[in-house]
Length: 197
Image (cartoon, rainbow, N blue to C red):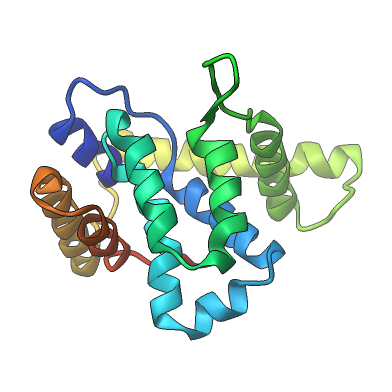
């Protein structure tokens, strides 16, 4: 949410939607399927280059295409399949008729929701009543949190390390016009990590 808030402050005319968390999770999955996750985890410079791709989420909408073209030149060729995937599913491309085309991620969202339910159930194929009982248990937990909130109990605040990272990210986003593409994307990439959930 801090990312979305920062973008809305700096670019109030833009409509910001999406979830950076899920973008990062999809990126980790793509690195894994491309056989690059091990390298991401062991080579800090390579990891920064990978995170520069997800840092594109902070670029002004009208600058996305030229900044992405610059990014393609900055990154090593072994990241080309990742860049192609990112362009196809997150940026889009202009087809031969001059229309912008972006692939739909609805199926992935459905898969994510299914995965979340499976994590709660802790089984792949639950019986009907196990499923119903699990949903009841999850709902009771949500109801309990709501009652606590209603009674005035507030959730714990963010840890200082995250507040500081949010402030640094906001500062970099506010300095968007003053930074080169590489400096902007690297600056952001050095302020978050991409981990498996």
